[in-house]
Image 1: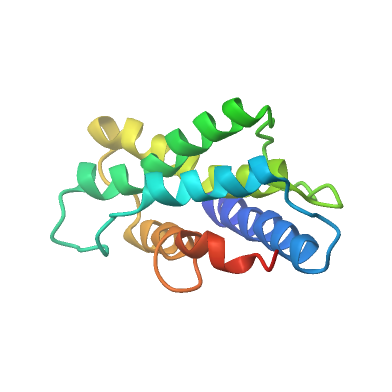
Image 2: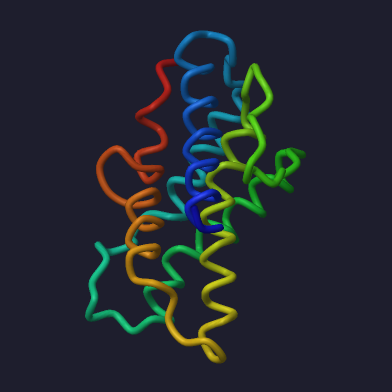
Length: 149
């Protein structure tokens, strides 16, 4: 399994842990956490569906936006972003676990963007998987819908 696949699998594991712990009542979001999730959703809205017609810098910018927003959210809320690849999420999971899981994918977008001038576009299949994690029905883009509180 390549590095990106490990990163994405871990991101899904951390995401799932946070959503599950919230839905099962092991993580009760505070008012500040609820507001932060609303703010994240507002800051990342407006990303059009992926298109192979978009130039690579624009396509990667859609992914990179998540990294920037999550760094700001983590800093504002006092949550530490933790590397997720190969690590089990701490339980009960909470906001730091959720943000760290999603950040891993946004951070990968930054790596691809930074390498674009020297190594060219990243593997299309990997970008499609990152986009599927972040955008569309049942993805991180639907963040608010995964909480019942």
